Picture 1 (tube, rainbow, N blue to C red):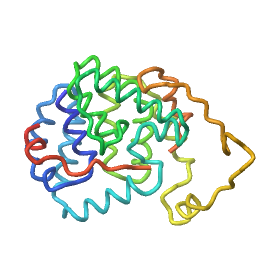
Picture 2 (picture 1 turned 90 degrees about the vertical axis):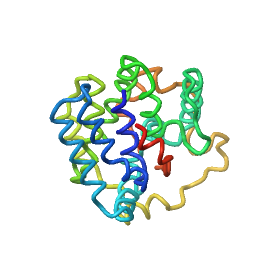
Picture 3 (picture 1 turned 180 degrees about the vertical axis):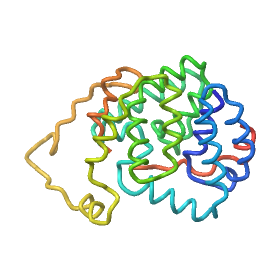
Picture 4 (picture 1 turned 135 degrees about the vertical axis):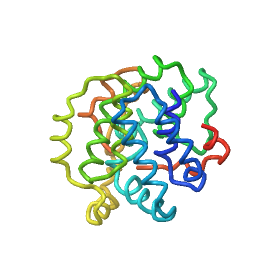
Length: 247
């Protein structure tokens, strides 16, 4: 689905190449039969609004949004596994799937980075892409609600992804849960995050035992339950201008 490639680009770090491809992306959105007229309108407006901004202002806003705190991390397994050993195994499993499907992964990108995940799905059959979006639909809905809580226009991208998944999700319950969360992007929260944690030298497993289950992202929907969501961002920087324009 070409629309997934567009959303992948829009969720990536803003670049001059992205801004230059604004018209091409709007054209893809307007001709995308996979999304509703309402989402086509909202996404087109988002692209026009984003690319009308000063590039450096857009980049600064992106940093403050996705790179400050963990609640809006664009790393899927950060929300599911946190820093446990299971996260490493899950990434190994996902890379294996990418390779099996002939999808080339740069060593500079973590496999669970959402824009990369969407790039992969954009090259697959529609039913396959929808199924894999379904696996992370609750997580995507959670991110959408967190963005809405902050009055952020990026929410439309996640709403569109949830719609593309075809999953029926109780958004009211998720919104209520999000409304009770404490912000983790304040200076106080960030300072607390960086405080030294107690180290127990007599515990060979460390402060937490982390048995590896070897679960991949497509192995179980239960592993992506929003009740398990924790929350560290990494950027996939400037894409090749020709590739972006050649959506």
